[in-house]
Amino acid sequence: MKVFTYSEARQNLSNLLIIAQNEEVEIRRKDGTVFSLIAKKRKTASPFDVAGIKTKATTENILDAVSDSRMN
Image (cartoon, rainbow, N blue to C red; front, side):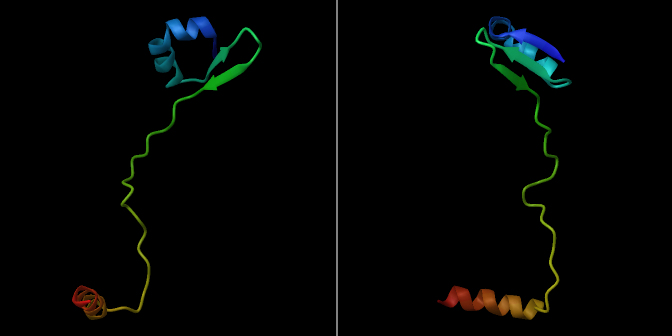
């Protein structure tokens, strides 16, 4: 884990973010407050990728429901 003072972190933010991709980084203020910086993992799945469900509805039931909703 790398540790930076607030001033060092501010001056080297770009490098600090690169380091945080691989390991945790701590930023310490003069008043003793400590902040931890770690990169979030990227989500590779689409938000539209949802699990299917089992139902007794047939294709005909679904098409009828869609048709009915369009007539109203």
